[in-house]
Length: 153
Ligand SMILES: CCC[C@@H]1OC(=O)[C@@H](C)C[C@H](C)CCCCC(=O)CCC[C@@H](CC)/C=C/C=C(\COC)CC[C@@H](O)[C@@H](O)C[C@H](O)CNC1=O
Image (tube, rainbow, N blue to C red; front, side):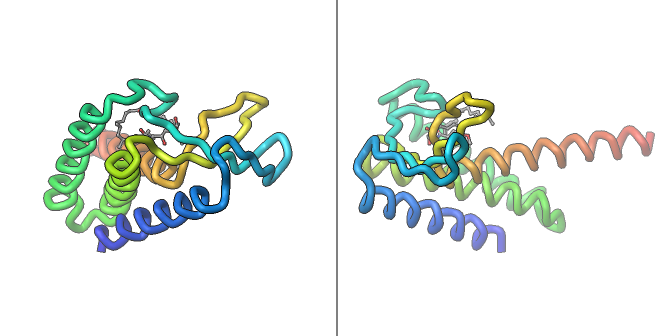
């Protein structure tokens, strides 16, 4: 079931990136909500904020490690823990989504351009969103488990 969620994330990520590649020139920006959300066709050869641009082998290795860890946790800890399974699936889908871009183009397609209090947040994509939501959810679950353990003591 969780692998299905990851697959849906990957398909939605790749479909949105395909639409951006097919319909927008790089650098082209379409306002969705003025001063808030824009669709901007962007490419990033690096990770968040463009760090380590071009270091594809590093990204391949890190991503394969991330995918390995996620699958291990999905097979061991997420049995019977639905929210953890969902969170891991979101991270898995996001990691694979960007991995596909890196293998195909040696860069990642980004298009979600938001301005948070007039700060132009780095342009990201569906895979990034899925990764960040998954990571945050795992953090919350881990925190709640700790609190529950402390209460039992
Ligand atoms: C989301 C992780 C980035 C994603 O990692 C991946 O692929 C993983 C699976 C593989 C990486 C090689 C390893 C992770 C490096 C860690 C990292 O980077 C620190 C992240 C912190 C995080 C706090 C939680 C910020 C988040 C930022 C952004 C996303 O905000 C929604 C801005 C995204 C834009 O800079 C956009 O251009 C990025 C481009 O799409 C390529 N994306 C990646 O490299």
